[in-house]
Length: 125
Image (cartoon, rainbow, N blue to C red; front, side, top):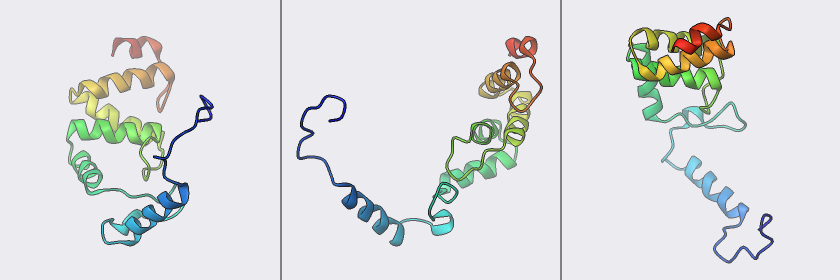
């Protein structure tokens, strides 16, 4: 182990084996190839993610808060970071009373993320 300098044991799987396994999964029929590719801009968006996006587009506040967070922080592979779009979704969800979105909106106001910095209003959320 690089951290402990102790032998790492026989249970490790060589990287080439893992790569081959991933390729077999992607080439096989088990993965929707809509978003499969190479690099950071092409990844698998699963059916649950697509349903969440659809729910957010239909005004479901929790879905809007989650999708807004994905856009805001760029934390979901396959969803390109878009701070303004993320803040807009969070604002809509917060206005509908979603507690998670209210917290995210406060963070955005305090940090000036997607909106002009306003620590006073951000502290109220």
